[in-house]
View 1 (cartoon, rainbow, N blue to C red):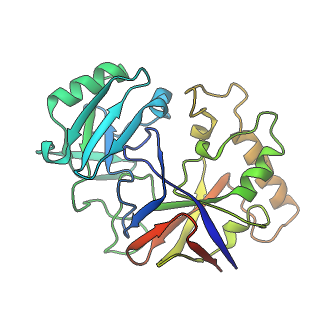
View 2: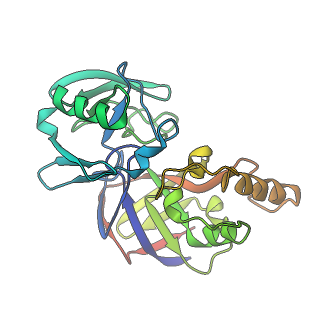
Length: 274
């Protein structure tokens, strides 16, 4: 099956707003500029929009000189360079504890003030110290939750929105790659080999979802009706009950991938699926 890549997204700081891009450099541990920065509490434990929904309203941009600019929802901004992050600190993302590079005190004080909680900003470093658990002994991972890449399809989003009173956008699901085509909804759960342009990807697992998808990325408000999570959960349970081939009983949306080689991809790159 062949189609084309519709959208590419990267998220410079874990849980902050994402950026659409036309071209992306792909590496096994993750896309360039994608989740290379992390915000933690004072003890180095990661914090996300699950606890602080307003994080989704922040913008983060990286230029060619590796300068990260953070912009608050009110438009105030601050810039930090990777070279400024000299202090080495132990950080924790889920069950993974590893070394990262911490931003200067002036940046952390400014960030703490605007997020209204004591926190620290960290840079992953040129070489990640975090292993990709459950894949192979040599693989590494960025600050992403559990996999280097996430692919979603417009067909599955359309099927979900047909059952929602208030449709949601793909930005609720924070993918790296979005493809469209005349697909059966949820067919991506069965794909195992994916090539986008010159890069070969391997299926790692389906992406299990949490209540974070109930936060509107435009307003930072949580859905009082717990949508779209409740409907997504019901869809998968119903599909399992009627024994649809390849269905998942978990509440999933999209698939996690690992890149088998480095390369460059762009919008309209050919996508080969099997």
